[in-house]
Image (cartoon, rainbow, N blue to C red; front, side, top):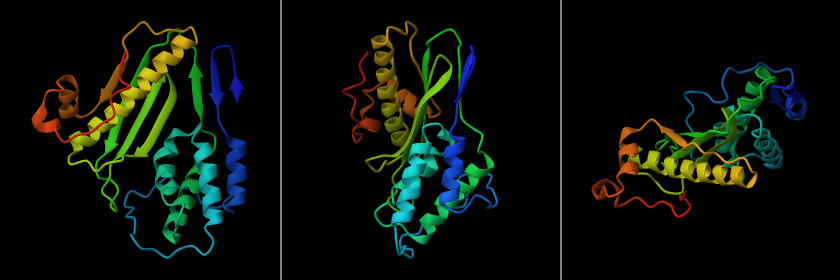
Length: 229
């Protein structure tokens, strides 16, 4: 961690070096991205003889996402196979580690921007999982212009359309926005400006503004009891 009067820089560079040493990848070739753009998960791959090493690496990667939101999606993917990892899954973990080797100095920068405005960005990967066709919810939150919260998690239900997947993602994002606002209030730093939620799906935004759109929403089940100002 590096600090000054105007900013705060958080990174886990030493932790990444130790992680690369544990995986024996400290002198490996770095990768430009955490995942291969043409990655296709296999339904039945060759199982690892000892999954404990894989599980240990994934647990450490989960902890690393505290300061590395750029690997959140990739780590979420490999963490779904902790119970029965295969050689392909281990290869994905090594790809993530090689990406970290090439971006070892990255982290989170917190600037003093003089306000506590809250905004969130929501997105989803519709039916991105080729094995069970579930979508992935992704969001990131900014308070005072600084990134403070993020998540990448597979949705609990199978979305019938990209609109439904985006609507589920917006629900999770709205819940996080409300929680952040209440947290700031408890910390005596209330946000008086309306919170902003950004989404790139026009149909999902129309449904959010008009919940009586029964023809498109009658089959959607979301947990909205917490979304209250």
